Image (cartoon, rainbow, N blue to C red; front, side, top):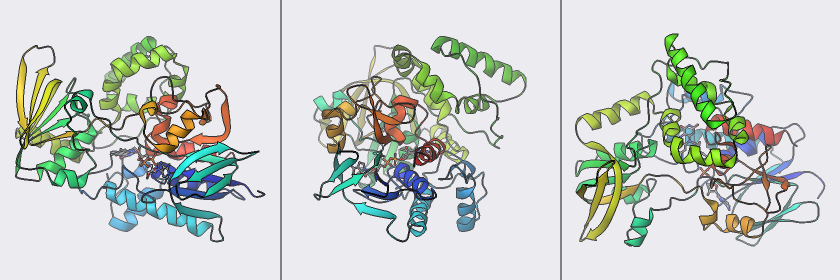
Length: 441
Ligand SMILES: Cc1cc2nc3c(=O)[nH]c(=O)nc-3n(C[C@H](O)[C@H](O)[C@H](O)COP(=O)(O)OP(=O)(O)OC[C@H]3O[C@@H](n4cnc5c(N)ncnc54)[C@H](O)[C@@H]3O)c2cc1C
């Protein structure tokens, strides 16, 4: 192999952004992008439901780190929307496809190839990596980018034990099939709101219950927006001290008339380094006790979405419950669910025609049934992060093998890097990471 060759596995947004950054390098490597399904939109941007909006304004959704206005310009040319708009996720999926087409045009003479196939193994060869696919191809590459994406939802054990399989939130046909009556959504985050808005259009569906341990729902973006402050929040590298300092800063900002949202935004660029500096026990403490608070303040809803959710709430159509399920049984066409409200021993009964699991993908790769992930971990090429979220990675996003050494030339990007960097799943971080990986070539 003479010219450099990089294989990117997965063509959701992360793989698209990584491939786009690689082909834009002057004298950059040859790139092969492997995808087993649809190229471009991935899980987040495949929806056709017009209720499903981005939760980031257009001005911060460019796929390119060095062209931050790209999506806003593209959106304006397609729809006339302003950079402050929250576009539909379907529209963003079309943008991802456009980014891919541009990459292809930039490398007309075989420098960029799409391969519809499933990567099933990635092993070291002599001096390069060998990627094997389900159709029997073997690709040799100097480097591999794992953009394997959001992992599939795993259902709480109470459902598994009862032999009941809740509907997955992205299963549009499954949602369409839900019959007359009340519905129970497990989880209370942005995904729950997406599903509630989709179901609320159907008059046969009566009350939509959303149940999570604390019943916390996402906060709303500032409206009108305020520019993100340029000075990052400097926090001590100790979880308790950092939390204390963060609260103090929020109070100080409030006294200056600055909303808390800006304090959260000021943390964004420093979160990965703060996260990496925390010992494992502190990361685990955060995941156990603070994560739910982080999620609702960090992952905020577009004002239009928050207003629709509020209206559903006020009309009684959406009821958010804090508590836990204690039993679930299927009786004919309905499910009988007993739940206990937080802080109470009293059991309440719900009879629902469907249950939708809105708790998100399972980040624990040791429980993954994906062939490639099992191969990488099983053969010690990669190891799961000890905090249970994705792969263990070095600071340059190279996977760390079972021996504890980073694999030269095997990078990871997107949701599978959350355990290593925490702030790593949204478009701004994915494009920055893509640019950093591309700079290696
Ligand atoms: C519902 C939702 C809404 C979001 N909204 C926003 C938002 O508004 N703004 C924002 O900044 N971020 C948002 N995000 C976060 C972010 O943009 C996503 O996490 C993004 O989808 C990550 O893309 P990905 O490519 O890593 O994963 P995925 O979209 O899951 O794509 C992974 C792809 O890899 C393929 N694949 C996996 N393994 C293999 C294999 N072995 N061989 C071949 N192909 C393979 C899969 O088929 C899939 O197409 C959202 C996330 C979700 C889930």
